[in-house]
Image (cartoon, rainbow, N blue to C red; front, side):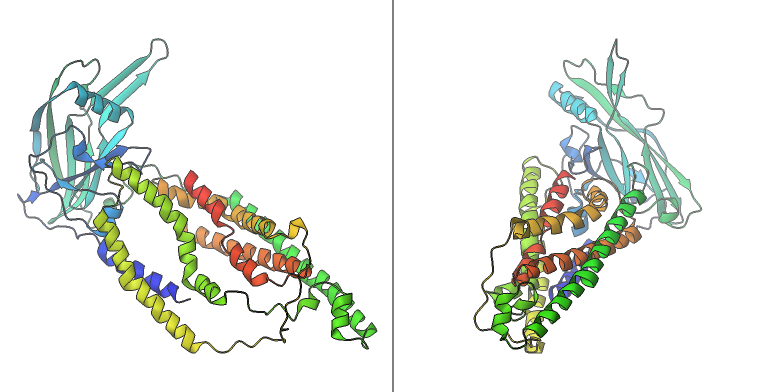
Length: 479
């Protein structure tokens, strides 16, 4: 189990690269840099592009901000803007730039507005979000479809002492520039206003959180789903009761029958008893037999399970990252970031895995089975179809997955959507349900397998350890 400390240290090492910069301190009149970040559809957080990919005001020489690893993984690509903001100095309708949009650029803006593109700016590590344009659809007959571009932005910033506490951007009392029925070029003028106000809040969390905080722009609909939890609890109670019945009644009857048969055939040999009876007790000399390729089995149980589980996810991520890369999305990880992650794993995870393997080998004692193992393996009788490995994997995967399926939906919603998962107490409770269901299913399936005189329970348990993966992977793809 040496890979668990390596994972902890790996994430701790990544956290060092992901720490965001601290807030700035300003004097009156100091320049406050506003960075443009990204744009993308409001309802698809996995599709974001650099802000300057739209036909907007951009400097002749675009200079990007140095980002942390966490910001790069989040799809941030900050660059300096043309907005001139000074600490505690108001600005009224200052011209940002004048530009002439071609018909192709107008069409690109129209498509972005129809897809509800939003933009994200960053000032002093505080995000400012707003929509690129305005779209209105009304009536059925006659139907009206109006599209407008916001060419004026109002920045509202609050300060306390020498720090910026709150930042927001709005388009109130602003009339959008219509993009309807544009056949030729369209001259537009971008303007902006800056308003400062003092606040008594001393911490950003009192007014609004720091980067990634809840500013009310994105919806948050995570709620405690008691119905699914009750359903999972009922499943746990049924499985526990089922296992108790097996242990208390079936095993008790089996032991009574075996003891009666042993007393009746005390004069016969052990081999005659094995030939004349059937069930789980007659394979007691084979259940502790070493499985084939035990070195490979130990490697799979140690660290190989990580690769077996992560390989499909890595392939899926490679395809998705390539598609983002081809489309110029900021969600695509740069090659340098990928090399950095691999280097961190090679320098942290791999050495700790080797060291853990050495310690484990040196400290491991000899295996002492509770009963003698025969030299010749017993022949396994033909098994019915409902005791096959495929059926066991299906049953053993469906029940645990059904117990956590709803919670998985909310977890994947935080991965693919904009929700922030905060129900950690409920998550721990569902995790306990998953462990209970997995333990009950493992006991029941192992009993059925041994009752069929199939002593290869170690290999089946290893294969069944990834029994939930196909369902989880499909749910992840649908998310």
